[in-house]
Image (cartoon, rainbow, N blue to C red; front, top):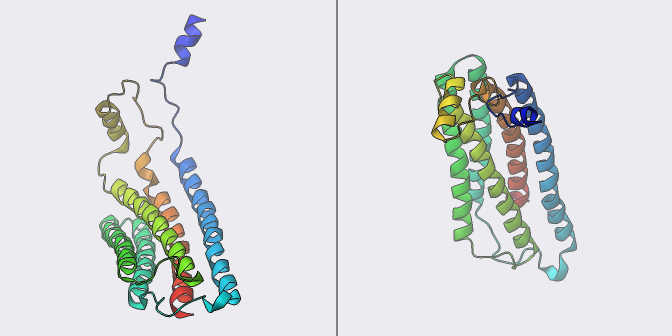
Length: 226
């Protein structure tokens, strides 16, 4: 019994997962997350047309409730261009043009941050709040959720970009990380070669970015042009 308990708590033996398994999980997860995101923002699209059709007391969009079209256009364009750069970066990574991918990845990351800043500036300069008509409430709620998802996308792109910048072998790096963290039991990574997951992760983040860019373009059309 003592031998069994000792063997069950021996954390020095790590059963590592093949990179291909995690890569496929990332691709599937990006599809599931993208579809969930589309359905989530569909609620705002429905609210927009439903409340617009009701137009109770003629207060759908009172005078003065006019978000900045220029800032909204620049923000939507930033997200769309960032998604296009991630696609081009993915092509570079597949062709082993890693420096070119890193340049495009850095610019895409910067554009996503710019999109967040532009939306914050738009909020700070507008003269209406969420209680000034149905359109105002839909606009504030819709754009707030877009910024929240943008923050998550920025984090995802940044971690993918940061991982790709590691030139050392991933297994020794995992050993060093375990030693630096003070964990005496961490003697191997959970995945055989974490660095090999950069491309599947880039494929996953590009897929979501492309879907989200489509959502942003639709919201731009609905909130600023209709």
